[in-house]
Length: 255
Image 1 (cartoon, rainbow, N blue to C red):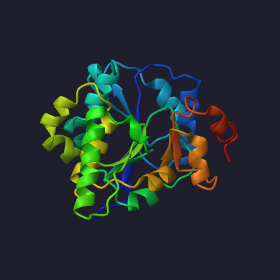
Image 2: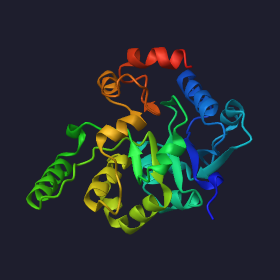
Image 3: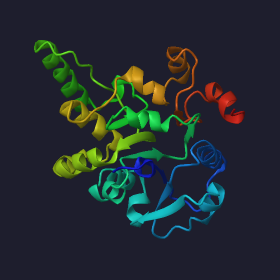
């Protein structure tokens, strides 16, 4: 019987010994809001993680290490996030929350989102951000839906920097599509889940964009908050990069 303890854990990728000021802010907020969940710092084997453990100040924090080459650049990180061994490491948890340290959580809706039973949820991307070949394929897929009179939107979910993933579903996807993973090349790992999630629906369940922005926002924060009637989502990603002036009051003076 599954217990609440193994419903979800928080995964924080780290790659440098000392976090900067924004990363400290992000980590402290994560610990403040989500302090009753197990936290795993995912780090290279050679990294001293003392600073992160001290800042988290939690008995529930632990370091899990992978080979250094996964943390040398974005390509290495993408390879880690698309490797079966990564998801198998956390397979005892039904869900994992990927929380990069340029993300900020506003409230503890984590169990609510777990209960929605999506296989992957993150801030929606804009449609034009798809790769040209990917975009054309999904357009053709949309036309197929229309021809078959199937009501199904193409999901633009989503960004992986703050994302909730059903561990077993992601494990099976990257394991059985390993040849497709190899062809994915230098492209961002989260795009893989969006692309194949749309194709494999309903075997892989992605939310519609209007649901996903309630979970997280990255691009166009001002427009997104208007869609949410100025209610905050569960969290945001790249808060300093996109319209910092929108997020600043909520992040510098969190309630």
